[in-house]
Image 1 (cartoon, rainbow over the protein chains, first blue to last red):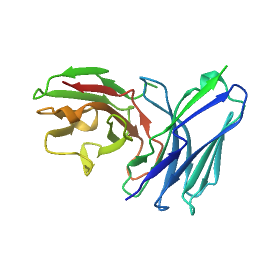
Image 2: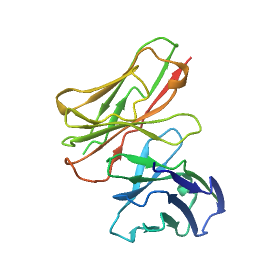
Image 3: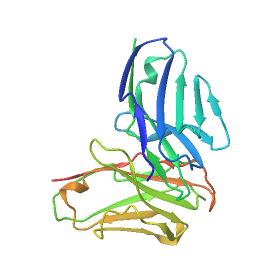
Length: 111
Length: 115
């Protein structure tokens, strides 16, 4: 059974700092990995999707990497801003076609 | 293009009552998923429709939950009768094309509180 873990559960950083969020999964037989952002009381916003054959994806100040063999992904946020404060979720998609989610990392960027 | 929409945004009901949640996927998306997040836990898969057919309902917790997708368009998730442990946020997601591992687009969720 696929299990997804995100560390740390919460993170506070001063504005402008670069940061890394971690995601690990137990079964490397995945099709893709998706990073989401969730603002309080809101739905999930997809940030990046990495297919299993890819090593990384970039969007603006965000860079996500995937090491499928070791069951790890990282989300790198450059030059953090207060608007980046949210909960970040990673999810892996398996052959069953549904997503397995981690519990998320709650990020606070302090002005 | 309109995103995934869900109705209602919040629902508060008493134990034993019935509640029906609705999801309208992005137009043309064949795949429709229901997920649920209960307090303090991760988001978990409930079921997957491909067009109007249930592809996978392995995540449905018990037979008090009934999902339908009429004509392959919108979907409803009915909980009858509701129990306290059903409280949580119910998310719907959709993705295009059958048998493809595409990005899933999520709705804002319905927050269900059972008293």
